[in-house]
Length: 394
Image (cartoon, rainbow, N blue to C red; front, top):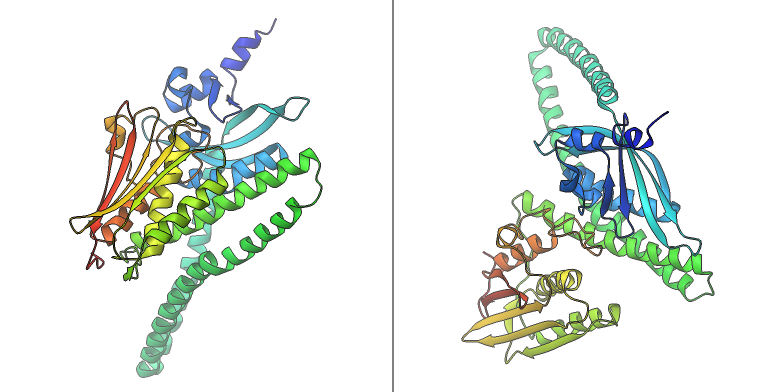
């Protein structure tokens, strides 16, 4: 007689189950062996935490929204990362289980190793490169023959090709920025407008859930696009783009606070702005910094305690602090909070790429300021300080 427990634990594929909040609640021995970990090392983590960085991005922009909208997906190619840092290519299938009233109970995920398939794909790429190299060799031979006819003509052609290559690189760079900065955000704004119109029409309960999921997805996409644009600029060495002006910062901070009050009506905010004069800063970037800090506080703070936002000018220095109550951040995690793609905890609301605090710290640096964190059993507090005047980019 077949032992069903043994069949699950030692199946030729990996199995794991996710709770309604996306946390791993069950995993079989096969997957643990692939990752070189024990089952208790995986319980309590999110599936997102097992993936490579490209897989994390794909998870947030495609994988999770698709699963929530249609309830399943098949043959999604991903890379797992073992405890030794080894990449394990897999094909993933997932299926949601819901109650009769439509509430999500759990999600089952099946993983199949795809090493052979990836090897075959690499061999195809290598074959294509070999064919391309043969084509280039033939082209080089033709160029050699042409050089014998006219050295001057060949040199001119070479220079023209170099110029065209540089122009193509510049064009592709401009296209990339345009796609993220315009071609994606403008149609996304149209989608948001359409969702707002539909939300005002009579809807079934299922339609309301789908509209809510779509609205949340578009908000995350806007945030991801903006974060990735800033991240690309930082990695290229360009730094955060700031436009410094002498600004009354209080209306800007009040607007940020009001937006959060409107979008989180069930949360309590304690606001205290003591800004006695103008500040030399980029108000849009300061608003982005504060928004990232408040969003982080809402995601990780206690729902029944207020999120405190404080700002003052004292001794020629601007100080902005965001404070929330909840589980303290361990010291070893505090040291990594401002690294890109780092996300602490498994909160269901924590669905970004882990760039928010990193970009906030870079905005602080661009204003010749600094961003620090302090966390204990009483509260977690992020504090941004900068000179109130003559704040030019570092």
